[in-house]
Length: 327
Image (tube, rainbow, N blue to C red; front, side, top):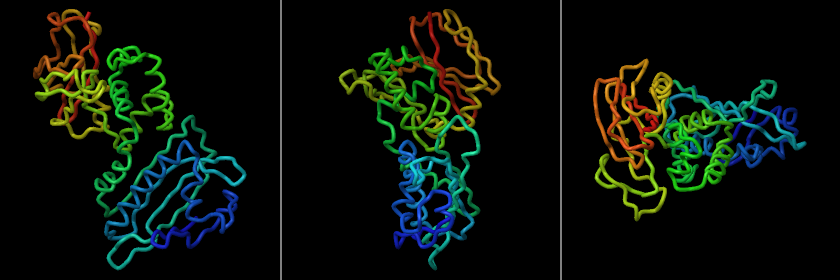
């Protein structure tokens, strides 16, 4: 355990650090406490910590009944790594309730067998505005992925294959594979589901966006793309009916409960869903809206040209976008 004083920029007390990590009290200073992290984890961990400190230093806390839990791989003095659970809570506050220092407990959880080394975090608070706290965390992850990487994450979310992503973004399938590897490496994820969960946890925006090699569209949801714009940029940000740009749990539930058949289709597509589908929107692959309909579980597609389309389904305050193929 240790106490970090953020106003003095130093650790004022530590105990048990040598036994767990091998660092003595002089070696385990503030710099060491913020850098004894696996290189694949450190950027994510420090973004989260920066968001926490930014919120806590500028917010009046009514009590010290808050704590942040975060897991990551910690570097021992002998060069090996262990998986640790870091639990931190406010320790000292000034007379205005402003955060001064925090108390941190480190627990070696390497004995818990897991195939994932993802950095995970959660917050408990009795009186903190958790939504504002999360906004500070989310702000730290702006720019975590490049615009091209966000395009690919969006298409992964919509179940596009590497070949289809390459066709959509006018790049080679080999380039798509390289981007996907880099995206997984940066987020310390092993597969697409872990990646989408990572984006949800850290407020990384990609949902409800359409992309094209023709750039920014004009004229709203029925607009067309300007092919003179920068290739591969976002051209439709359809967030006007959304609860936010990240993928919520309700979105996951809706996605899991929806089946489209047949797909590929020629005449009609039928929709099976555990949720009530209130509205359906059909877009072509460059984002132009083709159809809006309500209270139906079938969409006639016999008039459409062959190719890929996006079907957006609404249920309550949530929506999910599914890819369809017309033969």
